[in-house]
Amino acid sequence: MTKSTPFADRSIARWTLAAALAASTASISLSQGALPAPPTPPQNPTTAEKAVLGKMLFWEEQLSSDGTMACGTCHQARTGGADPRLTNTPAHPGPDGVAGTADDLFGSPGVHRANGFGHFVADATFGFGEQSTPRTTPSMMTGAYFPELFWDGRVGPDFVDPLTGLVVIPQGGALEAQSLQPIMNTVEMADEDRSWASVTGRLASARPMALATNLTADMQAALAIDPTYPELFEAAFGTAEITPVRIAFALAAYQRTLVPDQSKFDRVMRGQAQFTPAENRGRGAFGSPQSRCAQCHAGSLFSDRQFHNLGLRPIAEDSGRQAVTGQPGDRGRFKTPSLRNVALRERFFHTGAPGSAGAPAINDLNDLLAFYDADGGAFANNKDQRLIGLTVPPQVRGDIVAFLNTLTDPRVAAETAPFDRPSLWSERSPANRNPLPLGAGAVAGTGGFTPGIIATSPPREGNQGFRVGGFDALGDVFTVLHVDLVNVPGGATTMDLRNGLPLAAMTQGIGAGQGTMTWLDDEALAPVLVGLSYEAQWWVRDFGAVGNVAKSERVRITIE
Image 1: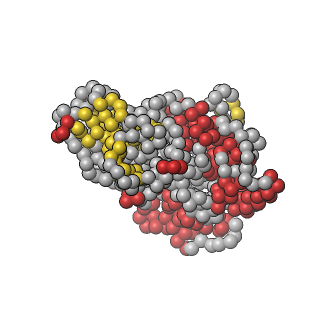
Image 2: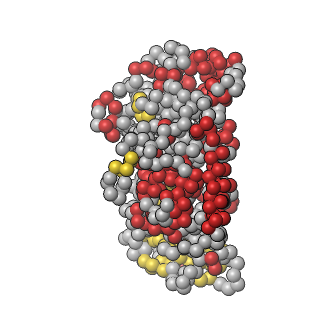
Image 3: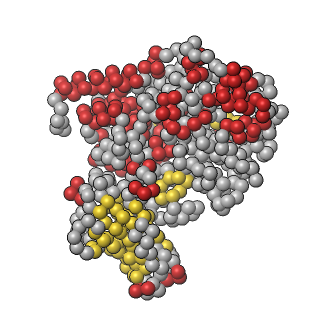
């Protein structure tokens, strides 16, 4: 593979990159603070090349089937390693499937459901809207320290090659095992029946970070040397082969560089700072026999890494750890998260809120402490006995909050190295979205159904699998994705802008409101299209519509 940089210069540049990365993460190996370096399995030693590759993969939206989701979409430093998109409105209706009831969950929005052909299909819970995870996104910031990961600990401590079934890491491989799960999850990042061959093949031909902007300095330096994923994998592993194991190794290596050990608490432990009187009182209350916070949030990690039932919700809604172990004693138990950077988080617990009927959401640390002052949640089945009689009265809550604030690493809050990151395509403001819904042009058809349009796939040059979907149309009739050029003289066109093929098809389904359609371009959007802007809408042959054509809302799409 031809490169523009001479070999000797590339070697020097790689050495410089390695030195720069080592300096930015020196606290991992050199600091003697309260938080030790994360354990690293011998099968996957951390290197600068591997870590920067993992950083790109972590923020790579092209790792999802439709180009809309990256690992970093749901895990960002500014919210303590959790999802910044969570609001006061639950995204998941909970086990009863009905929004606005007590079991609603603050899950993370994911992809629109699509089948193995990339065609949008209805989900039983979310229809044609964004799906949502059934649990609140946990922080990934200290994941390297846990022997099992996810709220229920369903992965780890071993890591198994998903292609061969062989154990690659027998102990300490939870981070590697967890890293691959979202990529194949049909709620989070994947079409149905996604294969690892499609994942690795897409990476092999994709332009790295094509959908991101404001790339970090280490990303820019690495791409200046190795501008393709095969070259980046070769730099990290010695050959250009892209495999699931290598993807997991790189993602885990990057996450092991995210060590939040520069908080005020760490500086106090190293003798470099002192607690204020309020912080010192809070530390005492945190470990007192009355509040007992430190019994579960123990040690420098502020987690015992065990599983506990807080009485949040009925076990029938989510059995937690029991679904993994099969043990009755684990019913309703969930992992104790680390409290490092907890003050940055906007949601707490696996539900995102206590969830008992009529209870308000827990929006801050004061609410959190009040929850524990009430002996935790109201559901007693297998509730942890350490919660009974626990007291966190109002007069000590302010001091404990002051102490918890000392667990925030300022680099995490400010998203500076090694917690820096690029800007994602999906993070654009509503006014700058591309595709941009225009909120006009819709025409209802038979039965009063107005066709809907799904246009979320990024129209960026080089993006593979660009798609536009439709739903709620009349079934089994002729439909066309009507394209009206905006910045090119002339009129409307119904031709594929890449190869001249008509954007026409038959809707799937039978009956009013049952028709679905998807236009999918399996090849990457070509550079010649950059700058082209057009408005697209579905036109559906429907004699129940005005003019015999039902239409979706118009969407502005600009190739970038």
